[in-house]
Amino acid sequence: MSESTDTQELASLTTSLRRHLQRRERVGIRFLPKGDLPRETTTVSSDANLMAGTEGNLFSDSSAVYEAKTLEELRAAIGDCRRCKLWSGRTHLVFGVGNPKAKLMFVGEGPGRDEDLQGEPFVGRAGQLLTDIITKGMGLRREDVYIANVVKCRPPENRNPEPDEVASCEPFLKKQIDLVKPAIIVALGKFAVQTLLQSKVPITRLRGQWHSYHGIKLMPTLHPAYLLRNPADKKLVWDDIKKVMKELSGESA
Ligand code: URA
Image 1 (cartoon, rainbow, N blue to C red):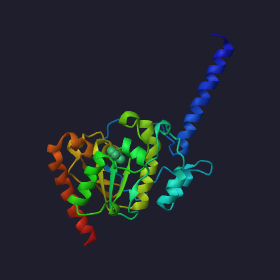
Image 2 (image 1 turned 60 degrees about the vertical axis):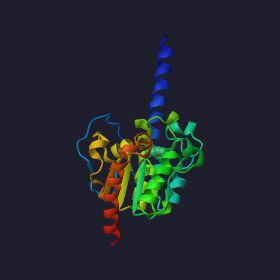
Image 3 (image 1 turned 180 degrees about the vertical axis):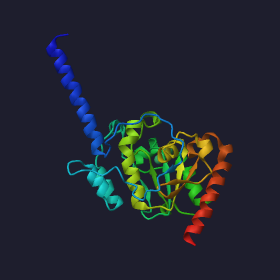
Image 4 (image 1 turned 90 degrees about the horizontal axis):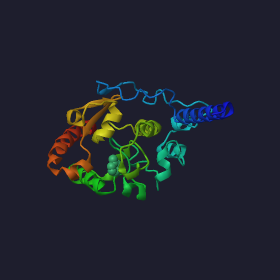
């Protein structure tokens, strides 16, 4: 290979790396991922400033995300998002739905096919089961709670979101939680639980116990899609949901 080809290749690699780091910076990420280092703790800082570390600067679009005062402003700041590769396969960016002042927030993994087509979280078969848990189980309406996902765009073939996709989208979920200020979060399934608690502990060990997400009570439970495949485990989710209802009745007392 000639020296000029080497130089061109190096220049092109440098440009790609610079663009990649700029894209990460635009969503407020200024560190390199620590990879898959296991973390033992299941209490995420009680630091009230949930958005700490995601502040933008004057030159990055993360400042609009950071400064959003309402969910509408946050949605506008996210815009026609192309911060990670999932944008290219989406029909709709699935932001979140429900009461902007909900006491109870559900967090899932990411949109599936139905959610991608309709632009609303949990509207497919797993969504129907979640709706039943909320309405028939808890006696609430879907509009009473807030529902969001870790990633806002559908991963191809419903694969798990990849670390760079989560890293790009996580500031939006954090900001949604910061704006809604729920008293309780129910994290649905391994992915939401492990992302919010920054933990590699299996969901089977985390579920059913209260954890803390920046001082907000967090109850991990099994994902409704898992329950469709393993209906016998519905009773475990019902146990978890009863704990949530007990805590909620204390919140409104
Ligand atoms: N599964 C999820 O985790 N989220 C949805 O919105 C739908 C299915």
